[in-house]
Amino acid sequence: MSMSRTDRKKPMHTHSNGVRPILLGTAGLTLSGLLAEPPNGPPRATVVAVHGGGMRAGYFDGQAQADLSLLTLGARLGFTVLALDRPGYGRSAAQVPDGLPLDEQSAVLAGTLEAFAERHSVGEGFLLLAHSFGGKLALAAIAHTPGMLALDASGVGHRYSIEPEDRKRFRRHMEWERNWGPLGLYPSGTFRAAEALVAPIPVREAAEVDLWPERFEQLAPQIDIPLRLTFAEHEAWWLHDEPDVADLTSRLTKAPVVRVERQPDAGHNISLGRAARCYHLRAFAFFEECLQSAAGAAARPMRTPGEAT
Image (cartoon, rainbow, N blue to C red; front, top):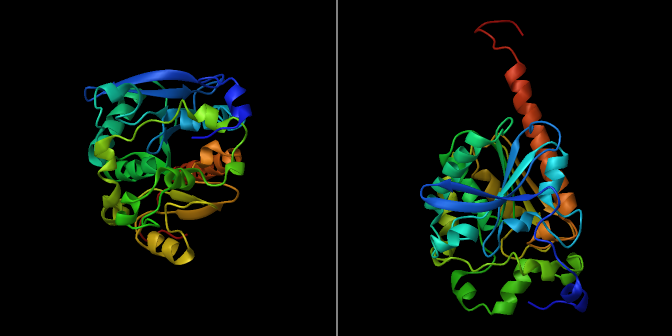
C-alpha cells in the first residue's frame, strides 16, 4: 500500500475522543470492538456497525479527518454505536485464526448483541450498518435473528462484477484498486491510518466468497425489515446497473422498505473517504425514518373488523 509523504509523517490516534474499546464474550469467544454512547442520557437506539473483509472495527472510526467517524456522529445524534471486530479479527483472531463461516458468525453476532443488551441500554433496539462482507453477515443475521429494526449496508450486492476464475487470477494491485478506487476520493492521511485497520482475511471466510450469489437467493425472501443499500460511484466489486438493481430488489419480497442509492465521489471503502460524512448522515436519516415509522405504527389504535375508518 503506497502512501504520500504527508501520510507517513502525520501522527495517527487509535480512536476518536468519546470512543472507547470494548470486549464482549459469547459462545466461548471474546470479540473486541469500539463503543460510543450519547453524552446526555440513554440512547434512542443502538447502531451495530459490521466491517468488511480484511478490515477491522476502526473502519467506522476514520482517523484521517475529524468528521469521518460514524461512531462520534452517531453519539452526537443520540445513538449508541457499537462497531465490532467480526470473528477471526481483533481479539478473537487468536481463538479462531481461521475465522468462521457465515452461519457461525451470524450466531456469534446474535449472542454478542444479547450480551451487550444485558449490560447496556439499547434504546428502541438494534439497527445494523454494515459494509461489504459485513453486509453479507448482516443479511444472514436478520434472516435468523428476530428483533432487528433496520439495515443500512454499503459495498454489497448479489452478483459479482468478475467471474470466480478471474478473481483467482487477480493481481494484488488490481484488488487494491477495486477496494479503494481513485486515490483522490480519500483525505490526506487515509492510508497511513489504514495500516492499523487492515487485517488478513481468515481462510474459512475467504472460502465462502464465491458462494454468496447462491446464498443471497436463499436469504433474500427471509429479509423482513427495512433495508437500504448504497453503491459507491466507483464500486467495482458488484454489478449495480439498473437491470442488476431491479433483479436484486425483486428478490426481497418481504422487506417493507427497499431503498437503493448511489454515493457520488466514493469508492468501495465509503466510510474512509471524503464522502463518509455524507453517507453516514444519509444512513442516520434512514434510521430516523424507520424509528418514526415504527413509533407511528405502535401509536395507531387497532381497529376491530367492520369498524368505520
